[in-house]
Image (cartoon, rainbow, N blue to C red; front, side, top):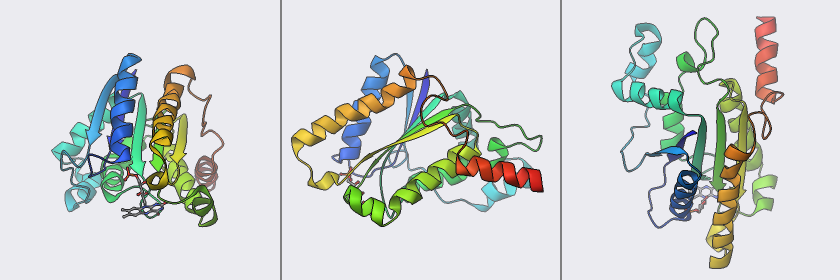
Length: 215
Ligand SMILES: Cc1cc2nc3c(=O)[nH]c(=O)nc-3n(C[C@H](O)[C@H](O)[C@H](O)COP(=O)(O)O)c2cc1C
C-alpha cells in the first residue's frame, strides 16, 4: 500500500506533529510504503504562479509540480493531518492542492480521471468545541471541501476524523486521541475501496453528473 501524508504545521511540538509521528510509524508498522510531505520543512511554495496557469496551454508544468504529481499517481491513499484554520486547511496545504491537483491531472481532455479510485483520510484538529464547529457551519465547510476536491477527482472514498478543542484537553485525552488516529488510518487496510466514506452519491458527484448531462 502506497500512502502519502500531507502535513503543514509550523510548530514541531504541536499536537498535529504528535499525530504525524504516531500515524507515520503506525502505517509503516502495517507494511505501508509512506511518503511524508512536510510542506513547511520543504518550503513548498503554495502560491499559484503564471507558469502554473499557463501550463493549461503550454502543457509544461513547473518541475516541482511534475514531481509532486508523480507522487500523487504513485499513491493509493492520502492522509492529510491538519489544524482547522478559519474553517479550512492552512494556506500551505490549500496551496499544495491548488498547484498539484491540477484539473489537467484530475480530468484529461479525453475525460479520463487521473486519480480515480484513490482514497483520502483527513484528520483535523480544532481549537473550538464540536458545538461551535457545527453551529458556525465550519463543519459544512469541511465536508463541502472534502466532497468537492475528492469527489471531483473521482476518489472512491474520502473520510474525515475531527479532534475537537485540542488546546483544552488533558494529556490523557491526547494519548487516547493518538490511538484513535491510528484506528482511523487502519480503515485504509481494513476496508475495501467504497466501503467507508464513499463518494459515489456525494453532492459534488451529483452536481458534476447534472452538469455533464445538461451541457
Ligand atoms: C490562524 C488560525 C486560525 C484558526 N481558526 C480556527 C477555526 O476556524 N476553527 C477552530 O476550531 N479553531 C481554529 N484555530 C485553532 C486551531 O485549530 C487549534 O489551535 C489547533 O487545531 C490545535 O492543534 P495544534 O496544537 O496541533 O496546533 C485557528 C488557529 C489559528 C492559528
